Amino acid sequence: QVQLVESGGGLVQAGGSLRLSCAASGSMFAVKAMAWYRQAPGKQRELFADITSGGSANYADSVKGRFTISRDNAKNTVYLQMHSLKPEDTAVYYCAAERLGSWGYWGQGTQVTVSS
Image: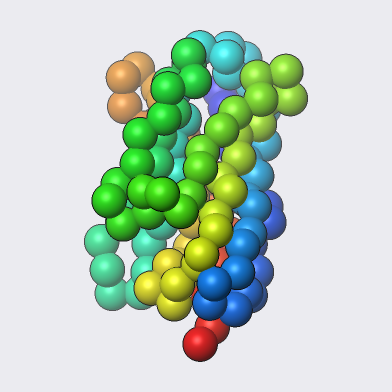
């Protein structure tokens, strides 16, 4: 089993930056792909960034060039560095981990609110 705990969310002004962390417990973290999802009220859950076990990252157009996903396998942690935040980035941000080829593990989420 894997447990995921997100942290680092909060209130930030448009144009600002935040860094989210996702701490994972369990085994075999280093071989699991990881992802960040977000969901705003009334909208579908959006997969916007993922990273393979080898460190290759992919991004949705909505965040490409502004967000960076990274991982530190020694710390069992995935990060999301967010720059140039926009009000439309406001959402609950979730960390997810691969399970049997799908995104089977989820954290509780952390709220990111971008004002102005």
